[in-house]
Image (cartoon, rainbow, N blue to C red):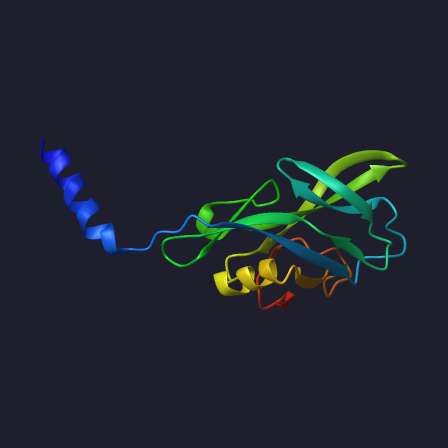
Length: 165
């Protein structure tokens, strides 16, 4: 009976609280530039959906653009919870994986590395504005490091160029 009383007290305390479970859909546009380029026809970049890499394109491209759609919900603490097959990681630290892989001709090969594009810096207000304005949140990534190799790392907001609506 004590447990029921505690639950009732908590329920009464929260009667004035506004709870939302609004879920919105947002589009991202991930623009990958400065790719490793010439001589790397065997190297491809794709995006991870669930556990599978899709939309792989050659690193010899001038640029590669991915357009994943995510669902987003406001967490009780005011942060954004990104959901869907492209959202990876724990609720408080969501990210998107871009995946480097090799090919042998037209045959897909092994994964050689990943890029973790962090999302947890995005605020609900920006996400909501993008959704209501039907505009994507755009990010630009330069994917060749100082040594001329493909970037394979966590990409934090200060490295990526985010364009919010």
